[in-house]
Image (cartoon, rainbow, N blue to C red; front, side, top):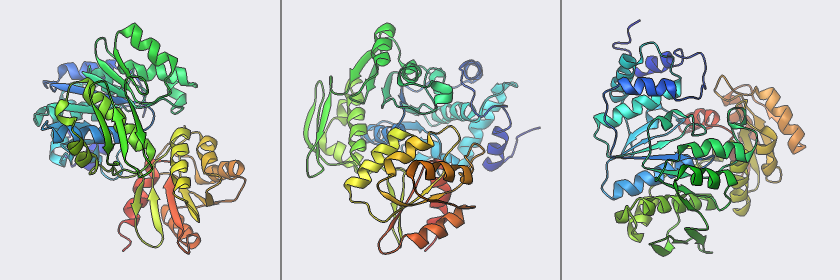
Length: 423
């Protein structure tokens, strides 16, 4: 069937039918189709991998590189509201027409190869970047790294934010196994920043075996945060004694910013290594679903923490801010560690509401509620719809209470869309 003239929504539905598997790690399919596509590689390609903080790091890199005068294309996933969010040029989402034209290029080169949804989108992003004369492409790894579609393009630099347990069904059941997959984006002679002070042995070993130029947090660069929220950063050639906090809240965002500065220093983007430019650029970066507040009565906080490490960081930020009367609406996918995600919130969440996330891979709300109740040793309501979850939350969140929406992009997006129109 011809796809000519299809709107983007229909294209996206068709993409879901081209492969029998939603997740099918491997590079052969992408490399075969990419080899048939007449698209130019951007002058510079940066991979951003890791477990948590990838999206924030991509957004910060984009802001700093754009401020330095470079045309930057970013590819991120998943999206919160619209597919177009995944492919951006200098922070602006690609249009439907641009994405459709790219899909048509992929389809012309596919020749029956069963690409997954993510693989198709990755190739389309590269086609959009070619059409828009992107100079630097910042590509967020979807899962792992070694066999992820993004890794079909050799990077000029890479950033690994951290390694913790997530996607264990595909990447392995322990930190070192997952680190091996993340390390797959390294290349010989290419700078790679590891942005967490706790580094798996596998990262060190793989960097040495591959011959990558490894830049390690706490060893080759470091940062500190003062009582007033300002932060200092020291690298190998630059030092900043008092930077403004990033717009995105939380100490984890300072860590993300520190890793971004280390990467820019490593690849010699000295124009971006200026305190005034850094403050201005990072003071504008925000992403939907990352510590995002929606004002009103009650106030809603959206954060897509979907693994134990992200949940621990979020719970720590909320506890430090003196969270009280907290109501949690939560939904998760079926590969997530429910108990590990719920545990950090046990002392700060007063009321739990489970909902089925908007994904075929979602855990049913009733099963999720059972597991939450067992872990938190308290009742968890079952909401049979997003609307019911909001109604229950608003009944609980009185007298200045706050509602936390967490656990998945596939909960945060639909609920944010619903609530943003409530006034």
